[in-house]
Image 1 (cartoon, rainbow, N blue to C red):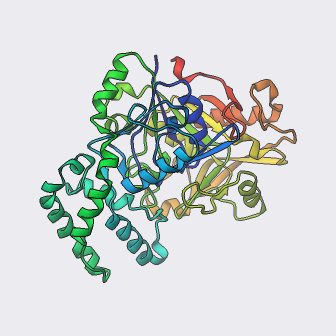
Image 2 (cartoon, rainbow, N blue to C red):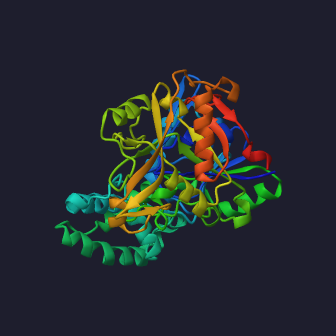
Length: 429
């Protein structure tokens, strides 16, 4: 049976949570493979709404849910999220939830540094969530991170703390902040250690067993391809690789495990935070898209910037991430527009481009080239088959498919799990 990897094909916030939840009900294991608790997934199941930042979406359905080694883990945020979900009746225990013991930890001074840098950046703000994700990844790559497995060996942590303080105390001094309180850090870690260690294990080994049994694994990405540290709108990106290939490295399984790559894309475009956005609409239409789509960040609550669908960006995302099929979400938000537009290319200083350039100055300077289509007045909300869609909505879907050079695998028409038009089943390949 096919495994499935779900990634965002825009700047995140594409509605991955609903799609992952829908797929998780048919999977045997769900794995988060990158990012931290800066991700925001909203699931609507019946009359319950669940907001997840760190836990894999499968946990709501009781599916085996795993945090892979590619994730940076804030242990206190983990405890808070588990407590909140248990309060909503979700069962979480070591039988259905596991954390890679080689995950790097997000620590309090990572959050401090994140906030200090962003405040000092002024007009150059990247728009981070301020949760310490970037600094934690820096320490991981700098080989000075404290990892989950270290929580079982706190008596031997002094050499690692030496490396951390040598780096961070100098940075903190530059901001006029006192050195890291080593004793407080050890006390905090000792207080949370047993809670985290209850779920810690070599998850690559557990996943190997799951895969050997022929089970279906669903890999759940955070953010979107356009926030990838290599392939995104640098420097306005996240601190990890968000492309599908990271599912292998971030979980401990080889590249053949990635399976069907399902890219999620809204029927329009949104972005939270700073950075280039060629199709952004600073007008009544942009406001309408935001209001109809309830466009506020799950994690930050920040208002999302809105614009028309950018086929150039999504085509590029599909190419660099090897997308097999696209899940098109929030089609119903376009209901009632007399005309709808799709960006098919860019103008840059007199030249026509069919790709998004790498340099920040070029990204900021491109002008979208639009193709205009008739809209539709009928409602698509809740549609569960092509027969339920207006003819013009079908034409829009087909044109998007042509322009992004990737087949549409399914269409989502509301936040409800079952309001989904399935064209190609990712798990059947």
